[in-house]
Image (cartoon, rainbow, N blue to C red; front, side, top):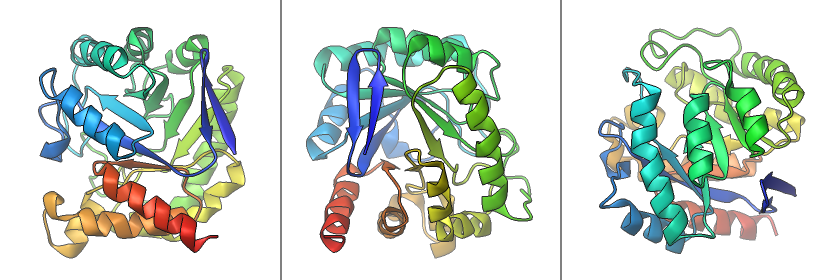
Length: 274
């Protein structure tokens, strides 16, 4: 069991949790995940009703090939929506998906409870110190390259070993900065080929060595729809299959577009492990 502390709030991970994706962007790869000020409350309410434990909001698309936007634009996209969610769902646990320290600060001040950073602190030298001062949990993800170039022939001798070595070093920096609670994300699709992604799934239990909560995010991603020669809107079945495997290998948080199906997967996995 892990207890995350965010300012004066506690979040207990004693069973696997579901993180619902809310993209405050016009260009995220899965159209159904996009929200705006008019649609977000209805979609968030449905996710929470279906069993989402965390809502993860992002104002910058990080799909392969996505162009980087400025932090001011990102703040303008996410802060009003976080304020709306905090007011409408005061007990909900909100996460801000950003690699900008200034966005993390503005989002937490608006009501976010944790920071989800695809760069694990490497894209903004102020991120780790900022998160430490904010006193919130931190999700550190591994990626290779930038969203613009990361899928341009990524290369590894041993992807799991390289990611583990990365986390060994980066966790030292995270803890040295004073961040108390950290969650690890191996970064499926972020500078990895389809083959790399499936090798990581196969060896996912190797990340349990860190004794930190493990987040997986392969909901409707290309590792599924390209392998099956389908489109993202047809990739729910493949996503659920991989969720089941990840849960068996120790995943603590499923980051998903489809909350109900992920929650059912967790429930069946619990029965299997009784």
